[in-house]
Image (tube, rainbow, N blue to C red; front, side):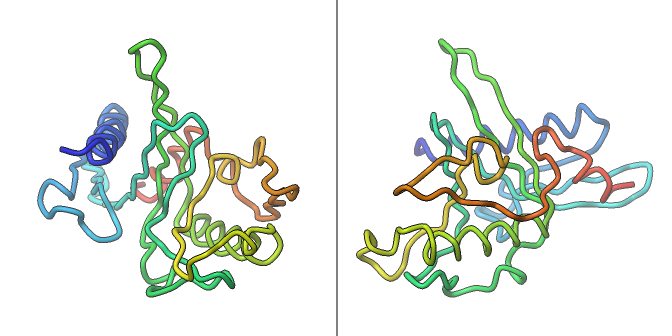
Length: 184
């Protein structure tokens, strides 16, 4: 198993455990169908019989930049697939911090709409106003979401310009209600 696959499994398992601690039943869709499209976890509320799917993105990076699975051209246009058709559920961004062999899991949760809006807005800014188009050599670039863009904290400067994130995004840190409200 590659390091990236192992990292992804660790994040997915951490999210599963968290959901089960809250009393929900959950399973990893990737165990049934490898690299299940558009979601990683299925969660079920046994009291209401409602389900929710969840996408998980995980990293160990000191300064996380979560790759979304989408690609952009140098004008900021998303290539090959539409955000609205391919983002079908909330996303949980898991940042695993390794402190002397002890792992701490930090969770940042966005609704489906927040993910769509953040990717569209930040990618457009990145290519049009962020000053990055001058450095790009390829027309097909991975779209990433740095942690500061997700949280709105310490957004950081890149090339002298700072992403303004003028979007309304409810605080994402441990925002499990963005998922559990779908199960009520």
